[in-house]
Length: 278
Ligand SMILES: [Zn+2]
Ligand SMILES: [Zn+2]
Image 1 (tube, rainbow, N blue to C red):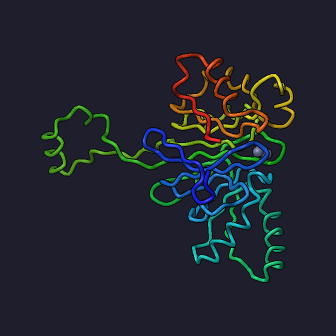
Image 2: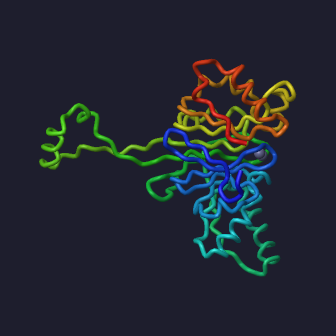
């Protein structure tokens, strides 16, 4: 991993960058939508993202926020728009007040409460929608939608000539729709799958913190996380074409995790599951 660039993963023409290791650091960026989901401790590759969505205020997900705000200010970049659970707004404002005191400089802040049921427009036709997650502190997951256009169903079978003719006649051939492109869970118990939005994203980045008998399902649930056994049981409910597993505990080596995937995931599901690089 490079501090300048983070790990990078390409899936079906979409690029994701970042890192994720339970209890240490988690941050995944989606460059095409210019948004960063969680910030880990804050590193140089993250500074260019104008939008940030925080799932919860645990340090391994959110402690880098003051660093990113100061770097952006130093580089004269626009103030980042930071979405977060409503209950985190006041503590983060108070924390920044102390940083203002320490740095003897007042940074511009744009912290916004993210609420279930709301939709927040980003740039270039993307929008952000929070979904419920179930952790030990107030938390949210986020889905990223892309507004697109497509031919209306009644024109799907028309020839290019017919389409050109219809266009000349001023007919409306296209309709708008929103593609549910990406969902990111942050830390949560398996119950996040109750959310239809999270279940039906094209790409689902979900946490699986504990992977074998070294930690039980009960342990995982007690700490507000997901165990691999629960993930396997829930797999058939997940509609994503690609599932990326993040937030694995550092007690497991990467070869151990890959072996668990190989041995336990049903053959027909193997190709849609990826372990985030670590
Ligand atoms: Zn975490
Ligand atoms: Zn957490």
